[in-house]
Image 1 (cartoon, helix red, strand yellow):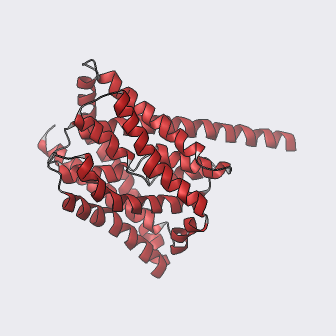
Image 2 (cartoon, rainbow, N blue to C red):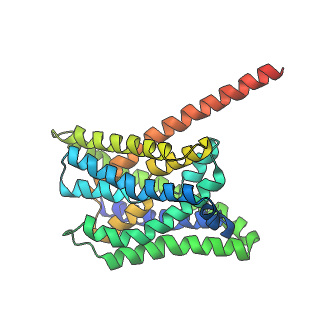
Image 3 (cartoon, rainbow, N blue to C red):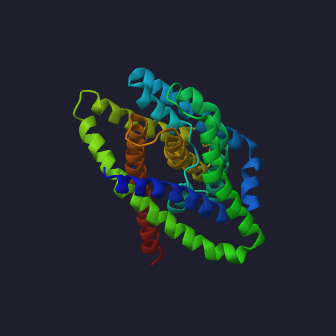
Length: 296
């Protein structure tokens, strides 16, 4: 990949992380932040599912399908990264509990920021990773933008409403640049990946991880359908932004197997979650159409 294209990709990653975290903060109030604490059982299950069961499941997959240390590190890195910024939008599309989705996303992101610097040195041991640099990047590029957004909405809601569309626009544009630039790296890697006997095994790990993580959240989400769906999507759709922060803090370039595994999980999680959302949306449309026919 040409140097200019690679540098553009790096810059787009940082812009996406900052603007997506800022947009999350602008969408959240202090009440949203505290609301998960009211349902202690659901809170405990959410933390257990995202930060204990899903990582353990990743270790099981690595045990069943032995892969290189870098690929294993990539899978474990994704498994401990919870709080994808897209969860509230998915909850909105699928008639989930939006308030729970928003507060859960913020809580999971904060816990991820705290846990990552503590756990990553063990996950990526011997890979030249600097835990202080990881912690610094997580705070600067994720935590501070979230807090800035929350503070701006609390102190100046009018200004927050003006900043939010701009932050979302820049975030959407930067993710497009990321897919364009690193997509080239990804497909180059995929050609190499499926060119050797272990390639399909790695793809299978990514698929099994995503499907298994979705099921873990669904089964642990309690009796409320809206909450089950939100927790399922939170466990199945990991916080790729946090994983990218760690990788960019640990490597001078992104052409490595840790990044490859993160991209593989990202690809299949987007495909699988999008398919599920599409099925649920079709069911909702059919149900509403049937209701209108019965009413007439």
